[in-house]
Image (cartoon, rainbow, N blue to C red):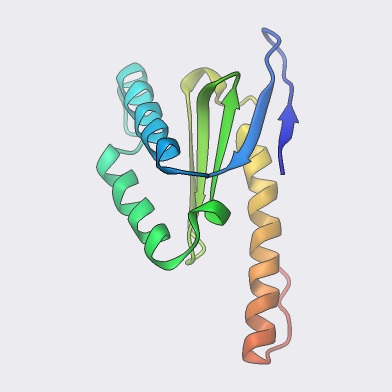
Length: 131
């Protein structure tokens, strides 16, 4: 499922898609290195944190369902991960912060958590919970 998001400022078209292949992981590393070099603060993960987080997703989950990427043209401008605990995180280039990517991911995350809770309730024969 691809989605488009437009926001104020220079006209840009941001598209969203799921993780597909190892080339995406290399782009995610590149995004972190670029963002950390520009922001020079703690907001952005170290590449080692991404490596560990991705390793955990790859071992226990499906990266194609739990990693989402945002592109502007051909450039990766943000990504989000949803783990099984249900911890989630997103990393967005500084110039795209507050432009709607974070909110877009939050909505997708809530939908996925609701489905996961429903599936867990069915498997465990528990009444469904509302988040």
